[in-house]
Length: 269
Image (cartoon, rainbow, N blue to C red):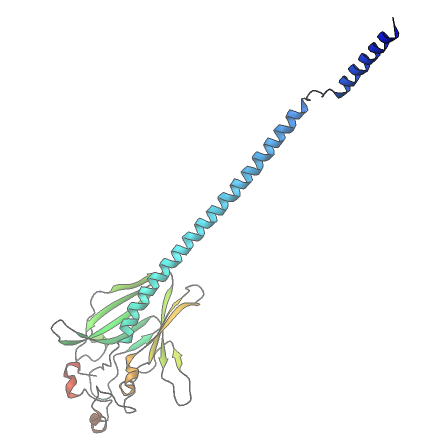
């Protein structure tokens, strides 16, 4: 064997050994296990994300329902406040019939109010009405009912009134409470009372409040001024002028006053 042939064999052996060292080893069976674990982990993470998104959507849906419910409650309360304010702001200065000191047709409690209104029929005939607002507690909140009755010049008190069927002004989860504003004295602030104390005068305003039935906390309120503020004498006879009272009767009869001749249709005021 020649030297050249020996070198060739040695070179081939070295090349074969080098090729074997550089050969990529075959994939081991355990690599499939790693891929399965990764897939399971990905699925678990995806499930967690789906649960979180579902919870978030549920929370947003409940929040939207609560917002819609609150908006509806506020809308109902707003309509009720507007209806009550229309009546209360237009309270008339009617008085009960009878000799001596004649009291105003007005009574105020936290859940009940009686007053009078002037109305004009389609034929422009004036008439007087007695209005009764009555709040009632229910298992779901409260209601306010409104009833009216004709007010006759000979009616002496509430017992003489014949109220028609009442209709509902408000029904909701809040309680409705009335409070009454006493005219301020010299250097004194306004006084807010739950029960109107005097039948010889009228309040200058009525506060209508929606309260939480459980805690009594005021949720919203509206101060409704009475139009009698334009003529203080109608609420406080002898102290100021009132166009609906004949001032001569105050001195002649010693009474709060009788209607002027131009107010024959509103006898007893």
